[in-house]
Each structure stands twice: as C-alpha cells, then as structure tokens.
Length: 291
Ligand code: GUN
Picture 1 (tube, protein in one colour):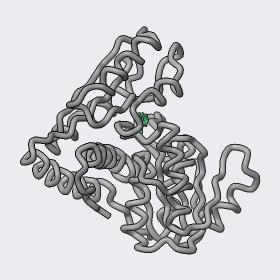
Picture 2 (tube, protein in one colour):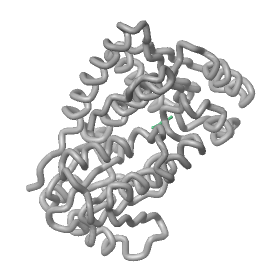
Picture 3 (cartoon, rainbow, N blue to C red):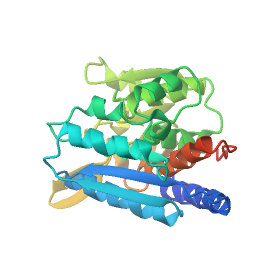
C-alpha cells in the first residue's frame, strides 16, 4: 500500500514559516498585500477566493479582495488591474479564472505587472521560468514540485509524465521537472497508448480534469503519483475526487496525494509564498528559502 503524501500538513508548515517571515517584514514596516479579483458568477471560484483571503489574513498579510459584477466589461476589469498595479500597498495580484465570456483572459493576465503576477501566468514570467531566470512560478506546479522533493529528495534521472497540457499546470510543471533533471513526457487528449506511457513513469502528475481517469493498472509499481484534479461528482452522494482512481492506484503506487488534502492546500500556500517573494524583491530584501 502506497504512502499518503500529506499536502495539508506540508502546506500548514509552509504557511507557518511564511507567517514568521511576515512578522519580520512588519518589524521593517512592510506588510505584504495580496489583491484577489473575482468576477461574480462561478460558485467554485467564490469558495476558492474566500479560502485564499482567509489564509492571507492568517499569515498576517493584507488581503484586498475585489469582487466585481458578472457583467463587468473588459475595460472596467483592465482599469481595476491598472489601479492595483499602481497601488503601493499591493504586492501580489491574482485574477481568479475562469473569466466570463465577455473578457479576453490573455489580455487581462498580461496587463498585470509581471512583478506582482503571483499566479506566474504572465508571458514574461512564463519566459523567465523556461529560461531559468528568477520568476514567479505558477502555484499548483510549484506545490507539486515541493511535495515531490520532500518525498523523493532528488528527482534526477526519473521518468515523469504529466497528463494535461494546460498553461496553469501541465506546461509549467514540465519546465520545473526538467530543471530537476527529470525526463519529461507531456501527455494529453490526443496521446496514443496513454496507459503504456503512464506505466513507464516513476512520477505521474495527473492534471487532466477528468474524474478518476488514471487507473491502478496504469501505474508502475512504486511510482509517485501527484493528483492535481479536483472534480465534484454526484453518484448518490456528492463527493470530491481527483483525476486518479485513488482506491486502486494507492495499492500500486509508492506514494500518492489524496483529494482533498493533497495538492489543493499547497496551491494556496504557494500563492502566499509568491506574495512574500514579490514583496521581498520589491523591497530589495533577501528572498527566504523554504525548500
Ligand atoms: N482557477 C483555478 N486555479 C486557479 C489559479 O491557480 N489561479 C487563478 N487565477 N485562477 C484559478
């Protein structure tokens, strides 16, 4: 039976260390500020944004939520982003995705000051990540990398497969794993013989958004499995499941993250980590190292 990777515990630990750094900054009269912008209309986003605001305050940062009407225009959203870019009390800006149809997501993301882009989605941060220049790294892949390093210590030479090619998870995850000396495959909906590709892999990152798609029989015995999926399903009872068929995969894997309590809490902890880093860079202070 594989070991459970306790993302909640790791994230709580990381948040405690971040809170200590925030206390030190406050002694220098610096309070990191995080603005989370949400357009009304997506119930899941409302839950995530509330969790982000709660944790931001818990670590002692300034939380500035901006909740906008569901009919907000592209121009009005861009004006809010510009105000936040110019606001000296704000070090991190996150625009919660998905955005409604009237908004062009790429234009909004790329209007954020890259130095405040704590999601790490701006094209400048993407370029910095792939060229190994100090970047703000997307939170979910960063959290996955921290869990993998904690579990395996050294990833050198491991075969890793990422199932999912999104800009938010799959692509940045590939960059991070290449930098850790993994041999990386990115699989997606058009990949042939996906099961065989997964079966060859020492590390499996499931980020495809299909409930319980990755089966126990696909897993190489002893592999480390990181499940990024958060899917709400209803068959009789409502429950949250990942992209991995947990009950079967855990019998074969060496270690596996559960859903909930695996990657989810890491995403929020890494958002606060990025806000702290953005604040230190802005104030030309040494960047604390947590992993
Ligand atoms: N929606 C789902 N995940 C994310 C995320 O990491 N950042 C933002 N901005 N929106 C999201």
